[in-house]
Image (cartoon, one colour):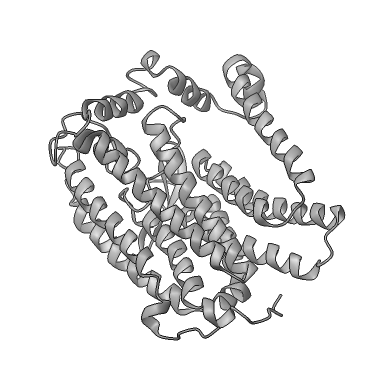
Length: 394
């Protein structure tokens, strides 16, 4: 089979166009969200700047070949762990390196760069490290047995537990769930026998259900094992927000009110009247629902389906296992973010502070997503180089 080496054919124009559409949507929705007197900054200008810088990141990431990322994977993973450790040990306060917001220590103030949220970047670093470990294990263990599968599961669990510990100490439940979803997706495609995975996922689902039941009916026991009262309130306000109208349930009530008031076609650009705190970040979907109604919300959701479908096609076209695992991790990360953010805006899921990918305002979140998308561009751009090659790198 003869493959073209022309740059125009190797570049993923479809993916670039999808990201461009998300950028346009983001600018319009953030522009409407910031009309409240709560904000004095021009978030649209900042978001344009983040997208420009994010595009540069994509170009830089795309330049390097997949095997170069495989060789550097442990350095990425180690750097991510270092950032989490540094954040935990850094002094927190208004004038300190680490910033406290809502009783959580998740942000770093860095010279020149500004404020970043390390956990956002570490998602992509974790995907690279996990993809390297799984692909290298499978290359060495060509004869699969239950023993090799359990060994691989143990390695995966160890890689997950380390960043998960630091993230839960912040605390950041939403990001922890993102790491778990990434890990679950890569485990599914790693080749581990379903005779092992089926009971494992069943136990996981039962444990999650048990934790939810205990949060409702066994609070004293949950408190003894380390859960804090505010985490219980998150569950209560999710299931019955109207019992907490001025506290934990306020954001959910106003978000659902805004989305419902948009009806079929919405109130139009700048037609928003329902006040929601932080509606340019975590609750950006409520702005979409109110101003563009059911139709506008469906268009945005459909665009996410198209993005995930396209990324899945890219993953299925890969012939290098490392690239397949990278694509799988990125798909899981984006899909979980979309499902959780939209779900928490319509009471389908608890509020966890997860941004809507490529639309919510925020430099750290957008850079993380663009870094991940840059990896997809790299896998697709350099795919022909490795299509028929043998991989001897471990």
